Image (tube, rainbow, N blue to C red):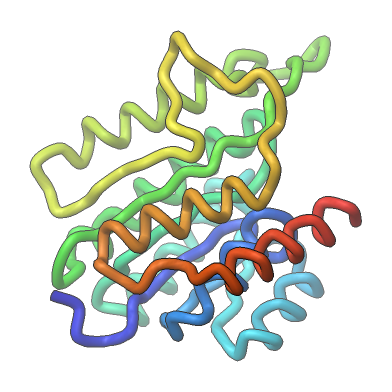
Length: 214
């Protein structure tokens, strides 16, 4: 049972789905910890929500290690990790790096903990890319499955948005509002929080359309 506000870490929070997740989850008044490699963008969203913003470039293993060490030093536990940072191979590899680095804090959560990995829009690997397989949806699904196996039997629940496996992948990019509503539903289900009202759904969808059109 979590008797304090939920402590939620969101990567890639300066823009896109990460930013919209932060805005959508804010009405529960959680303790948000937002990170991104875009300093000015991160400052803007963290200031607007009056929450913590921490620099982290998930493409850099060293940056992830510094970010995780800071969080593990400052907080005894983390309840939720939502990964939205990067695209292609950066999304998949960053997801793995950040989750593995923060597993100690997630395991110390007073109740159930949740990792939500938001898949990047599908794209064709560029010619000559250093990590063509890591850029694929199969790689994302495989690393997500590896995290599920690594946390099996613990208090940590690992989910992906959309739900992925090696045989079934989304054929086209999903609308940001769908990803946000799925993340919200997973947090609601895991922690027994109030569901999103019709008015909030409309607000989230409107914000998603504005963000998608930027």
